[in-house]
Length: 131
Image (tube, rainbow, N blue to C red; front, side, top):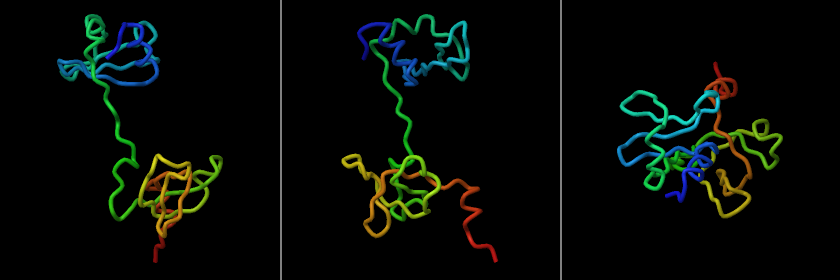
């Protein structure tokens, strides 16, 4: 995957995570100053050491984003077309995400928004009617 250990290190430092052919997970933790390059192996966390030599054979681990698998009924979200008001606009059901437009989130009724953030449990509790 990488042509050098340096490329691998830069990818780790940018927050990307990788799996080795043996199933170990490589990542970077900048809060550990003496050696922030770590591997999780058999439920223990160790320093990378010999894993550096596997830089050409690692596979990137992709974390799913909330909008990668929106269920058919949608997700209740805060939506906005302004980044500064992303969580203070209006709560609506987001039905679909598309990367092909600046207006990426399709709301109920075919309306699109630029920004969407799923409601938290606290948000939901504050807006739902309680008799």
